[in-house]
Image (cartoon, rainbow over the protein chains, first blue to last red):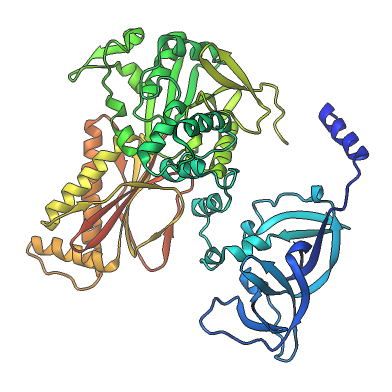
Amino acid sequence: MTNTEIEQQTEEVVHVPVADYKMVTFSLGGKDYGVNIMDVKEIAKFSNFTYVPNTAPYVRGVYNLRGEIISIIDLRIMFNLPAAQKSVNQGENGLVLRSENGLVGVIVDSIDRVVAISSESIQPPHPIFGDINIKYISGVVEHEERLYIILDSKRIFWKEDEVSDAPEPPGTAAVEAQDSAVPAPVETGDFLAEGLAVVASFHVTGVNKVWYAQRRKDWTEQHGETQLAEPSEAADFLAPFYSPATDHLWPEAYAGAFADSLETDTSTIVNVLNPGCGAGYESYSIACALAMRYPEKQIKVWAIENDLLKVSSAPDIVVDAESAEHFAPFLTDGKRGRTFSPAIRDSILFEYGDIRNVSGLPPMDAVVMRDVVSFFPERTQERIFELIDEIVKPGGLVVLGSNEQPVNNDDLTEVVDEDFVAYRKRKDRQEPS
Amino acid sequence: MRVEYINPFVESAYNVLKEVLKSDVKRGELFLKSTSMPVLGVAAIVGLAGDVEGRVLFDMTADTATKVASAMLESMDMEPVDSLNEMARATITELANMITGQAVTKLHNLNFKFDLTPPAIFTGENMEITNPDVEALIVPIEVPMGKIEINVAVRERN
């Protein structure tokens, strides 16, 4: 047993859970569900409600609740669960929920009871939950050996337009929908962050929040609390974000620090993944830095970019001799100017592709993705980090932008060499069995 | 997909279509797709082997396929077709072969070694194609008879 496991156990012994969350439980299609009691106005039996034509199939009609007209929604139909047909006179079991748009009645199979639990025992939903779209689930909790799925009534009723959409196709599309359904943890009303997301597709998350907080302060002192509506404004805001030597060859010191920080193993090939390689300056810098440091090894840089315009010129890049002076041994004179030697060019594979779809790559000695993850929504950022975690060798290097940090990852330790900052993956990590 | 492969496919699709249809051909914005995608109705597929593994798929509706085949046949003084019969299918297969062949020739000149498999044609409704693990490059091409989508999915052999 490791130390952390013992710590966790002792923590559980001393910790007394407080039953601070009450939920009304009910069953749908034979499974147990719950909603926060604060969202429930009352438990009711609906009968004689009036059918309304031309509505979504899960809208059963309207109902007169002591003089107030409320809509009745059948949760079983909404979630594609089997619904027992009842005769007309028989009432339907249901709940009246409070929502922002007034009261809404929901029909369920049967109401169970009120259960008090500790809100700490609520676990986040697992993404493979099948029956109900994960965006409607706020958590899962076990109580007296029964597993309750807690529905988020706000999500269900506030986003009617999304609910009526057809079931999402599997794969990326579904993931993208989740991306949009889960807002980034930005303070509500932070127009700057919202503007950045819309105009520059820059997403403020744990990856860049340290830089953002400082930049926001400086920006509002100069410009006031304005919204970023124009791409040019967003570009001004983001100008200090970019790492040194973006869209240029790396200076000698930076390239050297990168090669120094890399710890290669006994294999004869050094593999580096370079997502978001742009016009290729970064990829060439990596290849040259490594070729200089490891002349006996074969260098392979996998450069991926989703902007076709930028990457299409990358294989035939022309550099000015001055900025590439320190890479001089790897330059030749081509027809159009100074270019990289065939050996360097052959070591880089430029691909038009999306980092989210990479597959079939060998384990990497390093991943260089400066100022890349910040331009994806939070969910995608998490997926990219998972992917990087899988693909980087133990002891391998992860290079992020100079204003970015990895989130929730204890396996990455910081490596600093003057201007150069990177993260090294733990070597002794136990692979989860 | 490797950057060097993109242009040969785009160029040869454009050139061949322009030549055989003798009409205006417009190229749409290229994009990437990794999930399964619906096939419009007629899909001609050519496999690629050699330095890479993958395939090229030419996707269009049955109506577009019939009209394109007719235009090609007429330009060679042959009878046009009014439905997707054997002649029409053979013509579309030949179109797929011409485009892929020209692209592969261009790639050979750039020192990439590709081999082709004989084209096959699929027709039907509600078809989908899935290439797990390979991103597909979509080249949408507008011709007067409708839209032809060229879907290239290749990856390097490691």
